[in-house]
Image (tube, rainbow, N blue to C red; front, side):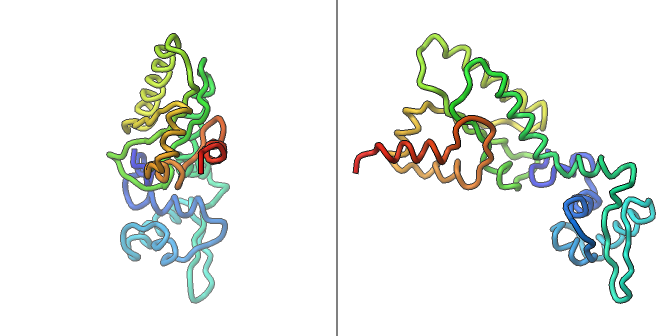
Length: 212
């Protein structure tokens, strides 16, 4: 799945980015505005797409005399499908959170970061996940690894993209913070929490007990 434009998985033409813009818009937009927000194709190409979509009734056109404003026809039978396609990233986040919520050993924190959190990337991008596991005894190691393995497979099943999981214990997280590891910035800016204690809260707790 193209992590920047998931709708392109189903609508690989310029129609995909155009529909994505229209689905997110709360008011009518001009062809130039849609082209700028779509970040794809040419102004002329976007206008051709809009004309074609208007002919199907999926897009309404408001003629203001000196300009045309386009908006998604929310009453169209296909509008809910367009909305669903436009929100595939949110759907993925929700499905991953549901997967983790069923774990026998819940993580202290789980989030996605990297391309999926930034809303960029491409077909070859990894889905990056951060898992903070509780400090634990050896007998639960196998069960934890089984859970992580299922999560990684779920990512592949849901998106077609590989999963990259960075997992560490609470103690190991404290060690990263003590050394001011630069990867901490990747985890935080930006990230989307899936479950558990917010990462910022964990970092604040550890900073409060660090010397100096």
